[in-house]
Image 1 (cartoon, rainbow, N blue to C red):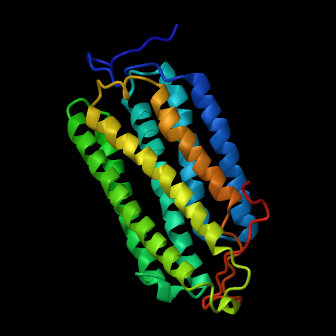
Image 2: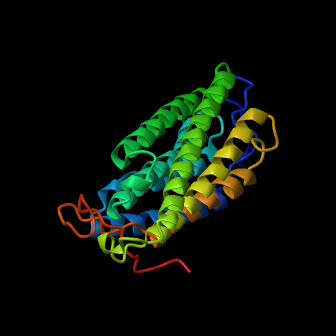
Image 3: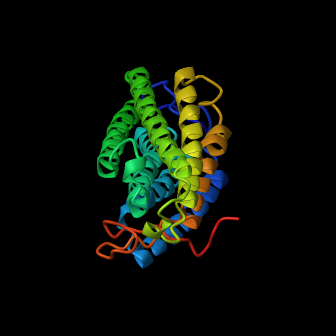
Length: 283
């Protein structure tokens, strides 16, 4: 019978519980299916800017796969560090694609005058913040796997999560201002953006951003409370407040997919990128 074990040669327990194999297997199936569907759609529509989102899905699959292995070897540091890092960093990659969606959406409706930041500059700014968050969280997650550096690792992860939360807050504010200004324009000059569902695109951005924010707040609380807290000593919270919301984010992005951005085709956009209706709208 599998038992919880301390790290070899010490009395330090990385895990406070045995990771559930059935729960991890279910997560693998759900994320693998969602990621495969997304990869198919990215390839079919050649929306390469969505690749980071698909990589985030792959991170989830790898993370939960390693989590199954960790069920049988709770005494090893490597599986703990890998599953923790991959599951923690996946939403950062989701965010990278979501940031790019807004910039392209604004350009597709010639809405630059309604944005508080130029779309090209906005995308670069938020992606840089995303990369910073990714590096900080990744370095912190690696340190949490060792007893001597666990505390400092937790603080670093919390700092990375705060960077992500601040960036997301600013991003949503920029999207909201653009949305409000577009609404106040009363839909004038619609000939420049025929049949472009910018409202649907913004709804997708808002919904995904809200779920990622809730998940990030959960992770901040989890790390602030410490390794002996209820959240880090039970298996179910990461599934309810992280895995399930992130799977919903993946499915939302797939169903309200910002596809058919056609470089080189001047169809309602200065740069040839057009956000069009998804064939499979969310109901």
